[in-house]
Length: 113
Image 1 (cartoon, one colour):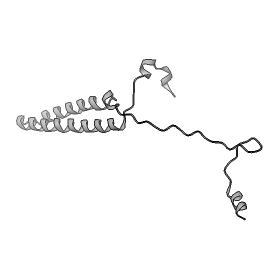
Image 2 (tube, rainbow, N blue to C red; image 1 turned 90 degrees about the vertical axis):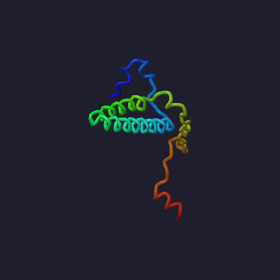
Image 3 (tube, rainbow, N blue to C red; image 1 turned 120 degrees about the vertical axis):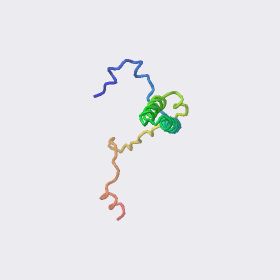
Image 4 (cartoon, rainbow, N blue to C red; image 1 turned 135 degrees about the horizontal axis):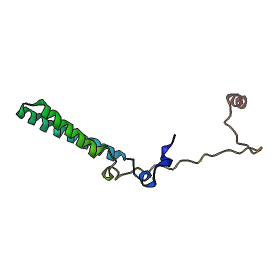
């Protein structure tokens, strides 16, 4: 079932891709944010002697990192790949006008003899 035909045009035009370099940068940003919030959360929780404070800060860091790295923001779509064009399928037309199929193993063995 394809629901895209029921969506308005402005929603269909929202980009949903991220290039390979953007994926690398998003992963790196995610790691930096999580580590930074983990260190700050652990330090603050240790000072306050409250593990819950550590968890709140870590959850906030996870939320921030998800908001910054999961959507395909334009900063993650700067270097798109140029894919090669698909090769057109070449069909051999025989004398009868129909397409010929590759030779079978029986036909190959006849040619060898």
